[in-house]
Length: 272
Image (cartoon, rainbow, N blue to C red):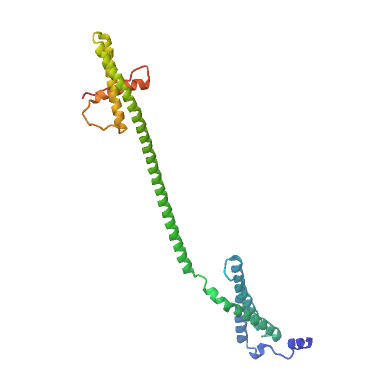
């Protein structure tokens, strides 16, 4: 084995490539410059691929980029050996480099072809743009639906508030009607007794005057009761002409009792 390896690496009986070119400088340096530029480019491409895969770990099938980097690096090495063998007949080392390059290129090709359908199945940038546009459209539709739902909920809340207010007013009306109905019955008894008393004391002027004042108050109270019953919808409304000054004057009597102030409220009425 060692004898075979020694004979394989023996270069004593070999001539460099330059002798084939008759040592013409223009041919030799054309090969040297070309192979050097190709070798430098081949050595720089794996570095760029390595930086790309290292910084973009989200790239699919990143391992295939490393395989390409090794393959391109081996190809660049063969070009540098082409320069070397122009003056040194080290063809055995060049052959070993080319054999390694062949193995790497074969392995890369074998791995690439089964990977091709999966790579073709990846979405293209245009497909991704369309998907993003569709997603943005759906988000806009969702936002519009949420806004419409919020408006609908706000309208429902307002309707519920109005319903609760209506129910409160209805309850107040029911309570007012019940109280007014009972008070109207009591007031009827009071008025009837006042009328009876007035007939009995016709000869006593001061008492008759007091009973008349009481009757006026009772009648105003009866009028107020009728309004309360109308408010409670227990009595139909009968539109008629009224004296606003008289109504305000009646209201001032109620204000005196409600305010409980030492001074009577001042009422300024316009001429009708």
